[in-house]
Length: 405
Image 1 (tube, rainbow, N blue to C red):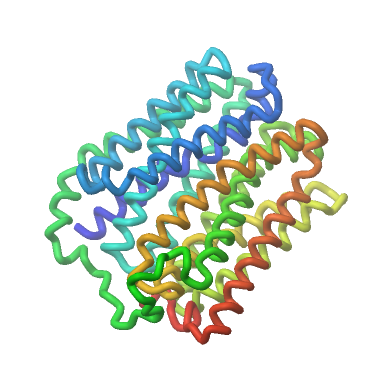
Image 2: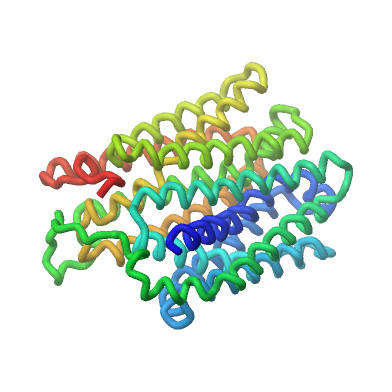
């Protein structure tokens, strides 16, 4: 049962990733068809992410009342209906209307599944779970690219993706009894409690007052800013600056998400031997190197290599930072701090891409690699400052805590 349920969870995370990367891949064509300004994609993205933030904040009460299985089903059904609305959209205003349920559905299923895996499965599954998000995020642009290259409308691409979402929703509906059985099945509860609470802070200390928490939040902010900005504006950069056809640009963006996907799958095995801090640092350096490649005025192959390297670099960072939370700040406050981190992460993905879109609409999309390098550098510096602070306070963090625990 544990294996079957885990497969279902992975499928649900594929559905979560499917729509995340499609808007950026399709926007060069959508913009022309709809006669919309360049920055409209950023506003749509912000609307979707805003709904995700709201639903994440209330997800705790919703999950407690209805359970993870039912919430996952209704969330997937909601996103499928929203994507179908994109297919029928007669104008940009309709897209904004459909963006609301698309974001609301994504937030609840994201919080619910992350919490369920953390509570019922060994920690390395967290990395593989986010790898399956990458599977969906990779498939989305590929599907859209096929419809664009075939001469059909981008709306047909949304129709196909909506169909996949509806199929996944049916699978979740048919397997709802497994979630109920899992509640009382001891075989599922295989995560053991750690015997040591490394940061035994006094109970009256507020989480935000704990040393290093704010730096951790800043790291999450910049991470999601890089990831979301690459996904939304990468295709437009390749079309406008590198001169690629829209279909080819969409495929190249899929390689970026493939880098995240493959990287996270491999990370799940590496974590048996390498600690979180090392993986985070290596990933940040690799992502920064890939961003620098986007600057090079050589053949477009360098830009493709840059997209892949950024994806591979980002792969281990998010799941490893999530898993570091109890080790850095103690189990007593980890749940609250985890919520702060997710909220800040969504904030970065909500506001940074529209900011770049606004600046690019008044200058040029050529500033894209500059922004990516600056954001990646800020992420690296804030993370390293946090490591130095923890070492200075003689706090054992990720050096002794791996996904094996």
